[in-house]
Length: 241
Image (cartoon, rainbow, N blue to C red; front, side, top):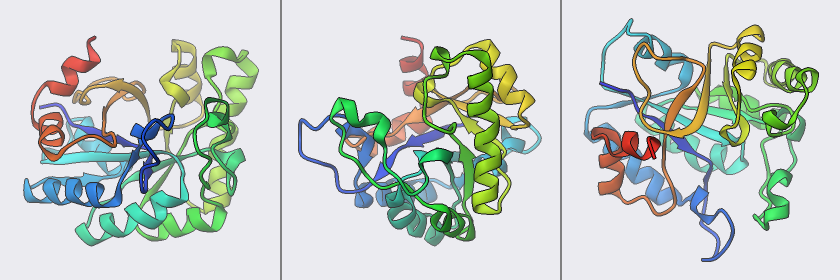
């Protein structure tokens, strides 16, 4: 049975209709209802480090990976308390050169600028029982970079986040989901244990740990749709399109 790795970005009040990338902002109440449904169905929500033995087939159980991209403050403020209450953990992939800054990589598209966690907030995220992952230094499209720059974005991000948080950073996420086989090599060389993509679908057990599919959870995802994504091939089929 494939394992869903949920992909979120922001947990906050969604902006007005028509706002670019509005779908990436899930309301806290909706997120809480989704997490409660997981618990009701008997699932455990896990960070990537805890999920790895299940992905490798070393453990068996009703588990779901939970991941957040970019490192928004609202992830700490609005998602962490809900996860803690249910005994879940999650991985947040942060951009190491934007700590305490904003999602300026989205500015040209008209996406509202929201604060990103600073070093102290990263430590608070880890202290809450959560995990920190790497999302490059500057949220750049790796496929547009030369080899040396791509290596620096991947490798130095890990070191910078570990220094800022005081925690190990063993999991990576490709910005925009764009990567090549060379980037997989660089992620492996940097010492990461896994890498996630934005390719839609549930993650295969014994699959490639450096090109993991995820299950998109958007602002408009209803509870019945959420259940379909978890329990059926709905999301897997979307990934094949």
